[in-house]
Image: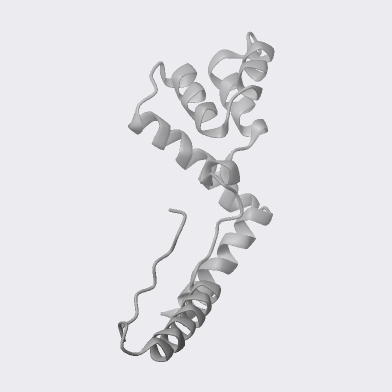
Length: 133
């Protein structure tokens, strides 16, 4: 979407009213956006919870150190969503919604316990949203 249409009334008969309404609507929209639109600290939520060390430890739990270096190289070339798919595929021998969800839960638990900066940012955002309710 390149253009945001903010409709007003007044038609052709009241151009000054229409311009005044347009300014008011734009101001209200900007204020709404400024106070009610929030962003996660990363583009992909998975970026917040991914942790290389956790992935390596999971791999080692199942396979030992054999193949770990190759797996590290393989994962380093992938975006985070694909990393979760690959880890799930290696550990569970499949990569579907259930297995990826299980892996996500492990990483989320570790993330929540460690409370890195992304956790604190999201916690702060949620507190801001809660104030609005």
